Length: 140
Image (cartoon, rainbow, N blue to C red; front, side, top):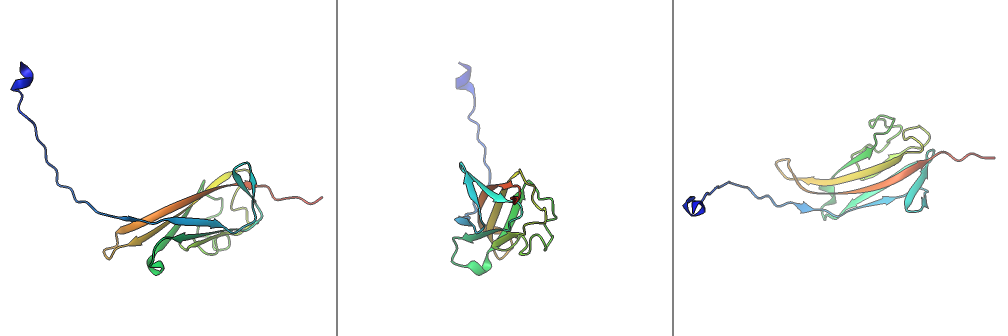
């Protein structure tokens, strides 16, 4: 039988196992909103304030990075629209500048990480929140 004549095949690989901690990241919305079903709705002219906290004892050495999808109309570097920037535990999107487009749903994601002494990320976690943007209310 041909199967009995085959020599056993072996392979070896060298692997380095790196253990990384994962942070629990909590995101809170501090702006006026309401629910339409399970979808959070905010008005396009309201200022949006999100804060993040990471489950780490050493809060001073944490790095935060916010992303918004789809990309806002305004430049992410605009301090008039994003006065706290995108690398703080608080994200502020100033209302009334047209940075976000009414009628779209946006996903806000914050990644919390801590780098090791050689600069590589050793621990991280992230959290996301999706919101739909409503047109500004009109008086009448």
